Length: 223
Image: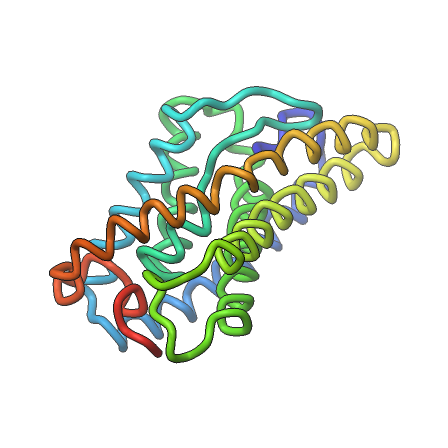
């Protein structure tokens, strides 16, 4: 989902900074709520886990260029379900930054756009979860249909933001490449719900984690 160098240039890069600041503000509010709920140690540990996972997703999992960007297995809904919205947001932002600093410095000018492309869909997942998951349901008890909705929201949001940045930078000239990217990226939707359910299924056998502070409280306990 990286916005490739040269797609958005010059003064247009400022918009990425603006949207990133807005995303950071929302993430900050989520982090404050998480701190009040779980404490500093739990949020910090989960954010570190999300950072390591994101870095791994970008660097080690298969990824390949398609159209205007790259297809990555980011597994944003998985991070949300296991670690919570705030740690997932921090992890996505920090993992992306570390990947840029150490392995892809040419991506740093696009960091604001890229982090927006990750965080806003995550916020959409958090909002959707409140609608499609009943208050009395722990995340380990989700159905495939519910996991699919969350995954589609995240991956669809990523595709929508990539399309926006491409058209913003290049106009309709890049539309065909956007369609190619979108079609390839949505294939991830077929895989991510299965990953979600596999991870949640494994979590059912590790209920001792409920009091560890290493997972979101909602993983095992109903809201």
